[in-house]
Image (tube, rainbow, N blue to C red; front, side, top):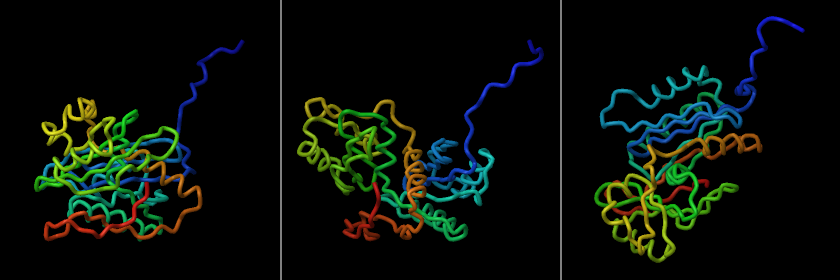
Length: 254
């Protein structure tokens, strides 16, 4: 019978040979960064930043990488939210993502902002009505059905509407009800809550922000599937610089 200290228990550790992927979202008021390696999440930052906040997105990314004991040169791919969202926020996130892609010679994969917010709901039997504050009394909207074993099903693509028009649209496309998520859903809760005969409700608890972990994992999957030559991402603007609805749309993966 041996004496001495017992062998240390096994621990879950990241496989450093697996792809390290970061996902970036600066399209709205909540800045989000998620870091995964292989199929293991390492970190996620969700920070509601005040306008004029001193710390930059690049500072936040470098700090998160340092806390995870990684460096930018360890990255194998970048996933970035390409909109819809604020003009300035989208430009900042895309500039950082494309800068990393160019400097490190790694692919940059684009995703729509609605996807992270839908993932933030978790599981839902009802469709998820993503409702983001677009300012000027309007909301960016989309309707998705979540499936834990497959990619979300897009029931209505991103559209710029007034809250009242979005409610009327939901009465047509989601008569069974929906779970609402996003800053627009909170901001205009008085218009939406309890509508559709009480079958329209706000996600509870209210998510801190979009969940980008599954988006980062999708980036890992795309890498392992041999997808290494992604098109350079371009922003999705649903509103032109003149404040009018813009028909220019950029392709985004779901």
